[in-house]
Image 1 (tube, rainbow, N blue to C red):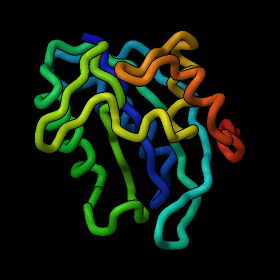
Image 2: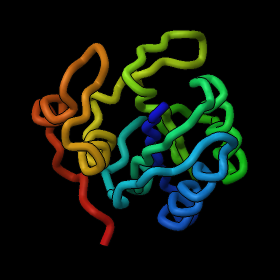
Image 3: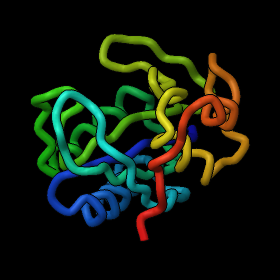
Image 4: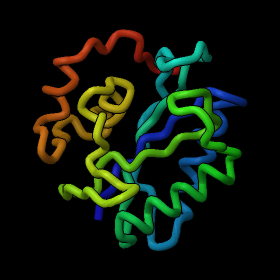
Length: 158
C-alpha cells in the first residue's frame, strides 16, 4: 500500500530532524521510502507565537495496516522528543498520515485522508511536488484544493 506522510517541526534544528525522520520512516518494519519532497518553510499559525515550520511529505510503500503505520509514526515522533502538550503549539516533529492508498478510514485516533489536508497549503504543496495528479478520497483533486487556498508563504528551504 502506498502511504503519504506529512512531516513538520519548528523547534530544535527542524531541517536536520525532518531529514532524520525521513530516514526513520524508511526503517519501519515492512515499509520502504519511495521518495520524499523538498523541505518547505511556512508561517506558523495557532494560538501562540512561534517559529516558522519546516514541512515535507514522504511517500512510503508499506504492508503495515494504517493503525500499525500510525503506531510506528508515533514512535518516531517520541524518539525525536515530541511531547504532545499544546494543540498547534511548537513541536520538534509532527508526523501525519495524509493518505493511505485511496482508502477512507475513520476510527478512534485515526482519520484518513487527514481531515485538514485539503485546507493546508503546507501539506498540499509538497504532496503535489511528488504527485501532480494526487487525489484526496472524498474531496477530489489535490491541485484543485490548493488552487482554492492562499498558498503564499510556503517556500522551498534554500
